[in-house]
Amino acid sequence: MKPLNILIVDDSATMRRFVRRAVQLSDVPVGEVHEAANGREALAVIDAHEVDALFTDINMPVMSGAELLRELERQGRQTPARIVVSTDGSDARRKEMQGLARWYVNKPVRPEVVRDVLSELANALAE
Amino acid sequence: MSSANLPTHLQSDRAALDRALTLVAEESFFAMVDPAPDDLALPGGHLLKARVTFEGGFTGALSCTMPRALAHELTAAFSGASPDEIAVADPAVDDLAGEFTNMVCGRWLTDVAPQHLFSLTHPSVEPAVVPGNGAPRGMLNGQPVWIELTLEC
Image (cartoon, rainbow over all chains, first blue to last red; front, top):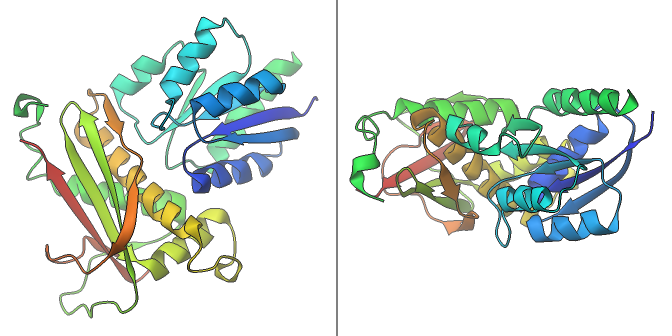
């Protein structure tokens, strides 16, 4: 199985560190793990590197997660696979993200949820 | 935002704040929340106050005030590190207090207004004194946490 290259986008360094740790504990083969503090930084990473999975917060300064996902849609990019990680678990937000992200994970994030998402993605890519 | 969007039960539904605090503490920080005792001795040392404002279905702000020592303890728990590995003055401790408040605010909004979209600001974190608004919301790992909620009506 090819290791997954991951990008974690969150304006909180603590949250990025937490997701990174959950990714590394997931038992899914992981290659490069990149970090970005907002959507604009994330676009630069995606342009410069091969990224398989993108974990993104929604509320961030400079460029929000929703703006990032819409920009990726506008560019017609099929990859990376998109996972929203947000404190906002409302029906309204989930509805807004439908079609923009494959998974929606609520904060507080449980490491087993990250593991399940990455396993599903790795299996899908292996098919 | 106008008061027309403000759920009428919000001002009295303080239990929703307790649910949000408990969920965040237990699920992300493996910390237990207990009621504050009546005879609480105010903590020594520095306090941190983190504040998040939100706008959407209605508008307001939520802040959490806690001892820096607690934020330090939670930072270690969240990072899977030993407290000895992280300095008490490390900026990660301030960042953690902000993220903690962000999570409590997000869970509270999800609970009380699931049909509304909200934008939350990046948390501001600053040194604080013991809030003058009464008893702590609860005790996390034996240390007090105050939550202050203000709504624009």
